Length: 174
Ligand SMILES: CC(C)(COP(=O)(O)OP(=O)(O)OC[C@H]1O[C@@H](n2cnc3c(N)ncnc32)[C@H](O)[C@@H]1OP(=O)(O)O)[C@@H](O)C(=O)NCCC(=O)NCCS
Image (tube, rainbow, N blue to C red; front, top):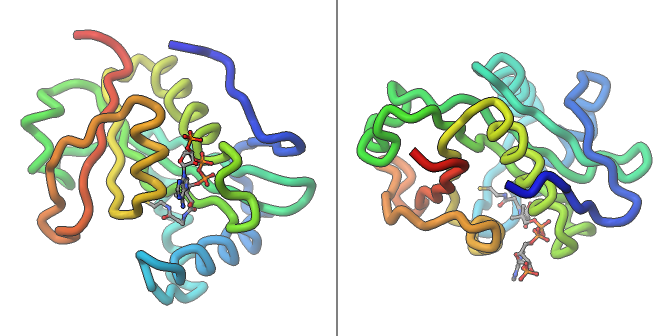
């Protein structure tokens, strides 16, 4: 797998730190208010999401910065088949990571930032010996990001979020 990560000029990608919470919360709330989501998250709900990201097994929680401003978030963790039993047929017992969040600030989109964050995530789990990485979306923009990096649409729909599909990338053979 390619090891280099290209980043849009002036952007850095760093590990999550609680000092970034205000920027993360503002970005998350505004991005999911937009179509196709139309969701109104409260600050408390995002604090609880952040808690979930930071306490997930084998977490990878990264934040993209433009100077002091949070402009991107990527969170992932080990996929547990207890939470996703309908993915057992494609996971087949292999070590698998699941992308729990990917958000880019509107002013910084279509500039390769989500692609950089996803490459960073893929590199991380490849280095940890993972075989597969999976993400779920119903946003056509996110589908493009997945397909552009070689993920395949599994055609598997979420039993609860039936308008969302699961995208799969093999990180290594076997
Ligand atoms: C989805 C999202 C993360 C994409 O971030 P991004 O930084 O703009 O994505 P990239 O710049 O890496 O785009 C990768 C490819 O997808 C294309 N793409 C991204 N958004 C697109 C859009 N709205 N329309 C058309 N193409 C788009 C890019 O042009 C690029 O294609 P290319 O490789 O052929 O040039 C961003 O739109 C977002 O945060 N949306 C709201 C939150 C969300 O839906 N997150 C995903 C939750 S599952």
